[in-house]
Length: 274
Image (tube, rainbow, N blue to C red; front, side):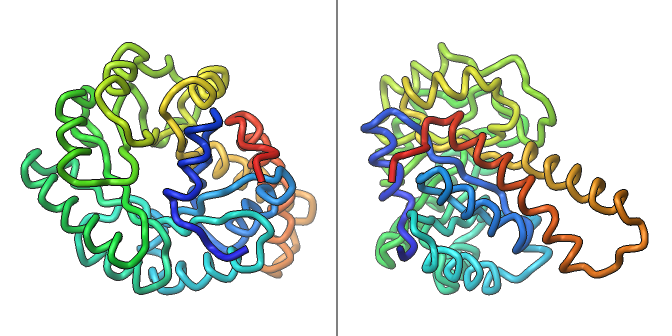
């Protein structure tokens, strides 16, 4: 199956009561493990290249890699630019074959954020690509304002909205959970699918409940899978400290990461949807 847009996988998720994982990729091995996991679970998957990944490897390489994996896969695969910061970031990703772009203007005043996002939405939709917007307030956010979220979605035409409702990036263990009251107020005034960044910090039971019973159609999952990769890498090196062949070493990380990713799909209710 060829790559699909974000809108194409989030629509069914919203209608049928599950969420699609946006899996943070740092290299070939984890990206391939995620697609293998999606195929094993018969689920759609979103492969994401964030700022750190793009600083490590050019966006054109990420695009080619994601497209190669998607075009050989038996399940829908979205190639997603995570946390793009400018029109130029979006243009580069679209040119590299990404099927979805995120524009994160959360550090800007609301009016400037709306203006930037509307430009990227127009660019993306003209190219047949989906566009997601980052939550207001950024890292120091005290929470997305529901009325601002409604205005933002209406004026920009985004395909999905990433919201701040108590979620935190790079959290190694489950936190206290999301602010359900704030989430419900946002849901009451918006119609687009919602996205949670920092999904690794959301308790598993709450992830499952919100996937089935809210407008959250995408959870970004990175830290817990990077931790699985790190544990697998340490284990394989400890078994044979004399090993030096990079390909052989990294190959041994794929199965544990794939199994960890399979658990993510099941926890979001995405398994068996393809």
